[in-house]
Length: 518
Ligand SMILES: CC(=O)N[C@H]1[C@@H](OP(=O)(O)OP(=O)(O)OC[C@H]2O[C@@H](n3ccc(=O)[nH]c3=O)[C@H](O)[C@@H]2O)O[C@H](CO)[C@@H](O)[C@@H]1O[C@H](C)C(=O)N[C@@H](C)C(=O)N[C@H](CCC(=O)O)C(=O)O
Ligand SMILES: Nc1ncnc2c1ncn2[C@@H]1O[C@H](COP(=O)(O)OP(=O)(O)OP(=O)(O)O)[C@@H](O)[C@H]1O
Ligand SMILES: N[C@H](CCC[C@H](N)C(=O)O)C(=O)O
Ligand SMILES: [Mg+2]
Image (cartoon, rainbow, N blue to C red):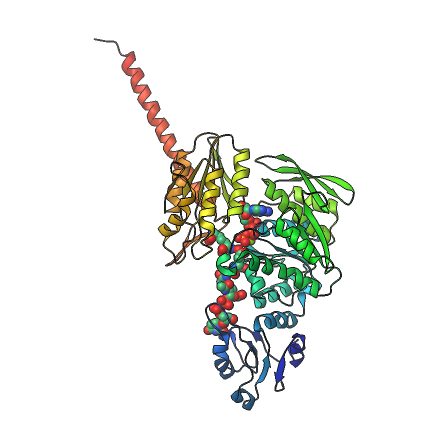
């Protein structure tokens, strides 16, 4: 839709001027302006797109969408001016219309919550793909448009790349898409204008208070996904909510009467109810009660929280139209989610895992799981991100210390902050004797592996799949997985050398002893 009709999708707008030729493009970045395009001015964290309106018109923009009223100069130049109360919301609707409302033709499954979004959407994507063959994925690790994987910039992209990607998924023959919807994206209305068939709420615990201010606003941000679904009037839209989580129970209450709600969890009354049966370092099993029947679900993922993630994926995809048995069969073959409780090395009876825990609750969950399954000590290496919620730092420290036998506190994307100061915020939660700090992450990993004894587990938390470390000066290549592998190789080589030296020494001893005394 590239005519003036496109503006009719906006819920509220005031239009000045008339459009003679079709629009050539719709952009929200002045650097992408071309002749005869429409430029939408967005207020951002660093810049205000309204500052580039005149430049956009000089470069050939024929239409402007802005929160300001039409100035005299624009009227005189015959610019089409659309004034709206919120350009972030407007650009969502406009991009959706521009690309032919792709979310209406896809079965869209959105996952929101503090932890478990990536894992749940990955599992839902795997279930969709096994049954419906080609499906899309949008999330923290990468985007998959049904034909190719694209590295992710944001967990939930802005409206322009998002709607373009959904249109590409349709072109590529995708029937469904599983996508993470972050709280940042909800506040910034990146998903405005989207039709969601299923919305999953995983949980809500402390994170991102630097952005949201308090837990109440954080909750309201998550809830807005479901209010958007309820307001769409789509009778098929379903909210799938974890009722083990207190905020989940609150959400069920607040959505009741507004839309279809299905619950999941371990508590009585859950529509999809699970009873954990077996936890091991290779996978997990649980009993699922659904619709008066019980099923055995087996997943190659570790930990109770991953049982919950798989239950969420199962409840979400079944609510989207997948058969329960197909969903269960897909979960048995679920892929390893990169950097989520991923076993990287198992050498000399020491197992090393990489995980993406970077919130207090995630640290609690992953350390509890590891401790439960570990027959020796749990040595945890972790840090806290710079330029992010500072209040979570001592809480992460306290949780890691309480649930591990030893902690090495290190750096995790210090960004613009001083890494030593971040570590100083973490340490107060951890008693002396149970930890030491090593600023250099590679060195911290090496020390953890060097101190491990048979049966110990080394857990390297916080960066998961990330392939960089971000400092004030920029990013450097860094991967916990690669670092562990390198250290393990080095330790193996040095222990081989040590053993060879040891053999040599004992040979010499034997020879000395064997020599006849003169
Ligand atoms: C702080 C923040 O969230 N920023 C996001 C935001 O950018 P912004 O609005 O702040 O951009 P800006 O630089 O201020 O520019 C404002 C406007 O001016 C325009 N502009 C700018 C310069 C110019 O010359 N001309 C021009 O027109 C820009 O195109 C933009 O429209 O909107 C962009 C597009 O949607 C995002 O890519 C960007 O994410 C940044 C990269 C980011 O790091 N965000 C993180 C905090 C984030 O969103 N994380 C969540 C996951 C969190 C989680 O749950 O763990 C995520 O979804 O990724
Ligand atoms: N359901 C869950 N409950 C609590 N913790 C979880 C859960 N699922 C995963 N975790 C922990 O949180 C970490 C991040 O998981 P995942 O990447 O799936 O979540 P996310 O919500 O996508 O995170 P992000 O917002 O940072 O992208 C995992 O590595 C694990 O430590
Ligand atoms: N989406 C999260 C990821 C955090 C990952 C962790 N490695 C860090 O850098 O703090 C954020 O941007 O806050
Ligand atoms: Mg994620």
